[in-house]
Length: 252
Image (cartoon, helix red, strand yellow):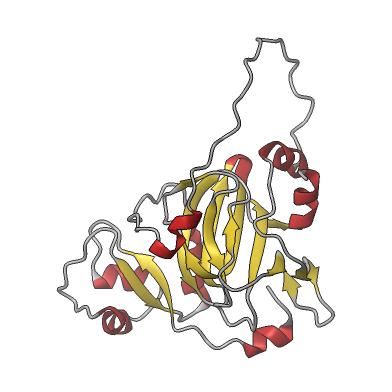
């Protein structure tokens, strides 16, 4: 995500946040995320006979790469409607203004020729209209750096606690802590797009929330081990990362 030097400076995270599925037990949770049942029990004060309510937030040890992949795959799974909605932090109430979609003019029925070829990701992104989540200088650009480390998005410098916004209309698929990213929000959008917002100080949305383009979803911070307040921002088409500046420029 960032440079190799910055990656080496990150402290090792101790856990991810997930939620209990219907019918979950300690053993099922441990198997799903490839972790030790005893460690999950200690992190959450559970034992083998504990009754778990659907939607309870749980801590999962950041054990292996397989654990991280299981958490991320669940986070973007549109069919996994298992997350409870949490209250928005009171400190963000002053920013949480309603989002008003533009009024569409009446349209006439017209005959359209069959499409000659599938639209490119850039074309569908332009139709979706991404906007900058935060105003500020880009301090870490997209792509490989001089050390060979790859950034799958961009990092935007910010003041601590400044609100950032959803780049496009969509559905929140993950809102919680994730190793290396700090407080992270993932939003799915039409046409197979996903945006990611990392290193947040506070998160103002919960999984399952529908958000509008330009709606405040959190505040910038330095969680995840970065050394100054910033927002890491990604746009992906499927699993393929795209330089956000290209799509944001197309919609400016």
